Length: 473
Image 1 (spheres, helix red, strand yellow):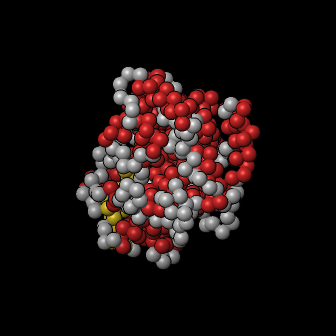
Image 2: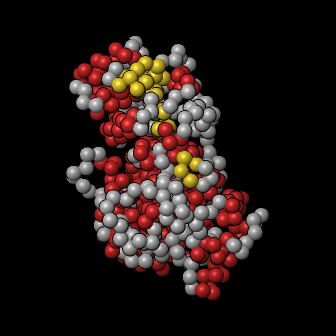
Image 3: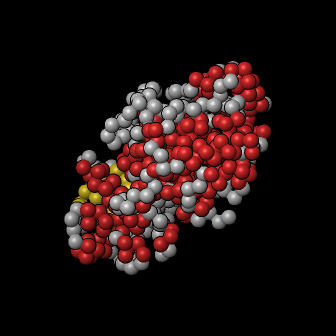
């Protein structure tokens, strides 16, 4: 399968939107009702910093670090590596651990064969206690859906094996299978489909799961009780997505992602987990480009990852561990040979317009509109905005284009309001930089024709004053 820019945007969205939902839900965990718009305030059971994600995404990151190598997640070696990662996380980095997950991870030592030992212990605990169906397996499963985009059976087998490392209840594993398959379909085909994975779980439980999925579709997520339990958490996340899907008043269709995450948090109780589960599927459908820049600037968490790191893990997972022809997203540098360009925005001299060759000049804040190496740019991560924007004449290459342009213009305005000088750049300052500069000028109230003329004159001969992006400016 060819990994198109849209597919990779969706891959980038899985962990990023999961982390966003997680951080959005953190301050409200345990509350039965949530009034007003949810915000990334921090606090919670951690306590967490504003924008910091919790154990839901931390455990997903452990899986992603193995998936991003291109490993077959069903293999004994990969499962041992994931199990070792869980154990290391539990002992060294966990900010919060579910009761059942703690019970399992506290009794097994790392090393060869640890996946088998964890799975056996989880199974034995379930048989002895009749418990083990918490949502801790479901919350981390979104990334599994990216590892085999063309193989639904391999996806299901990997999801079940990874879920079973800590959860012995078959329904917990079923939920991971269903959600991983939904993420795979969304990432590959750009649509929401949950019941389509029913044939991947044992026949004896399909009727029950079909009823649960049908009951949740379009329901108020707050009406679903006990969302700390795996089937109920799946229902609450699915309800949050489906109940907000159709809204004719939305300016941009991809804003469904933010609306659904708000609905997931408003379900109450296990707010961070339900929103994290929903986020993984929403990101797979709408892409990382649908996650607002204000959230991307803020989200972070163990082990010291930011939005760009989550993007890298998602893309490498979808690409089977392989970088592109320039070594991105793993490389330290992505250089585009050219003379440096750095000129003031014609309507705000606190915004500097330029190209990649001027990126290392020591800027106060940066908005990058092209691929950037991991070592390029030295600003504080909260003042670095990486934007998914393709320089393409194919409208389908940027399915969220109008949202991205508006969102990026507002991100520049927010950085300026905080007193920062902002460097806005793409590879060559030909299409993406002038397009965003024009959209920012329009946000300032400048007439479109005047904005176009001013930006083109400021940047000079590199500007391509034609094409699809220019038409949307």
